[in-house]
Image (cartoon, rainbow, N blue to C red; front, top):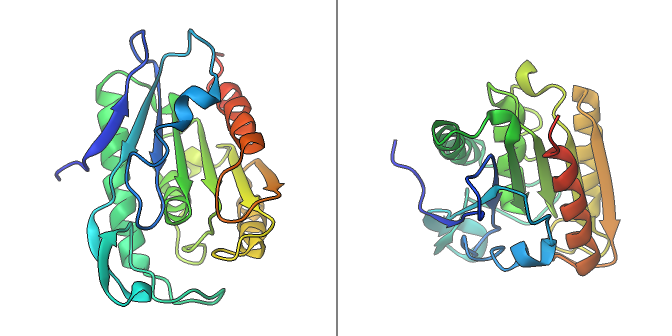
Length: 221
């Protein structure tokens, strides 16, 4: 399978960990690249950041306009029809990126998945079903679209999951973030939930929290 095109930011030293960070609908791999300096991670953090570009496809909710998307979105509604096959296809593509990191010498236990909005739906599916243990899963302003169809793998049964959501998100209501939290707690994973005084976006306080979380889940044993 051909790997997704990605923006990659290498650490000063040889990478011993990796963060694969998925953008939202209509964006691209450059969307979260500027956040890296704002994370103010320790100077000795040897983290490779990988920001994949979603393939372009017609998106139903946007009148069939072709744009970068991890899967088709049919409608904006809490009970919207879910493109399960599209999410699964993107999940397999992200697994390919994980496997590449492992071949580069990064242990799976040192790989983090982060996703914003649509990207978050994909990292839930990919991270919880992946066959090797990961360091952590972080969903930003997202929802667990495949909670009824996902097949959790015991390899990631204890993988920490963090969920961040805006209190005033009119694109993906915070209720869906809370629903994801309850589902993942039911699976048995440790979960951290944080809400912010923002809409469907990212804020400065949240960036500090992402930095703290990354430092913790990627801490050496």
